[in-house]
Length: 160
Image 1: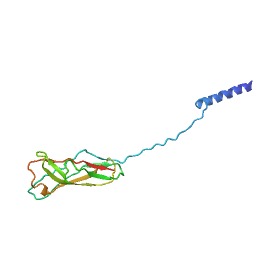
Image 2 (image 1 turned 45 degrees about the vertical axis):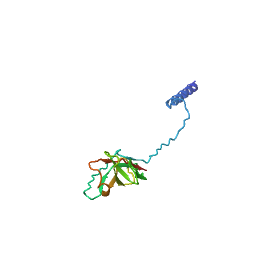
Image 3 (image 1 turned 90 degrees about the vertical axis):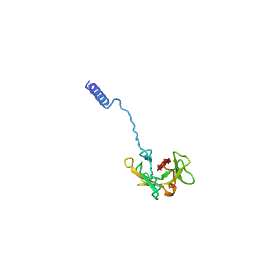
Image 4 (image 1 turned 180 degrees about the horizontal axis):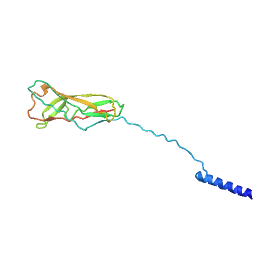
C-alpha cells in the first residue's frame, strides 16, 4: 500500500511541476527579426519663394546688383549635385528678361549667379545659405520706361 501511495504522490508531484511550468510540456521555436531602414538623400528649400529686388537708377552709370539668401537643407552627408535655375518666363535671345507690367513689349535683361555656403548636407536642423546674385547691366536699363515695374519668375532647383 505504501508503494501505491508513493506512486500516486509521485504522479501528483509531477503534475504539479508540469502545471507550474505552464501546462503540458511542448516544443517551441524562435525567430530572429532583422530591422533595418534606408535614409533617403534629399534636399529641400526652407521657404517656397524668395524675391530678388533691383533699384534701377539710369543716372548712376553703374550696373545694378541685388542679392537674396534663401536657405535649403539636405539630409546629413548628402552631396548637392544639382544647383540650377530655369530660364524664367521671359527668356529670349539667350537672356533672362524681366517684362514690364504696364507695357508687355518692354523687357530688361538680367543675369543670375548661385553660390551655396556648402554642397554637403548636415541635416534638416542645419540650413545652408544660398546666395542668389542678380545683375542688370546699366546699358540694359538706361533707356527703360520710367515708373514701370518689371518682373520675371525663375525656378531654382537643389537636388542630391
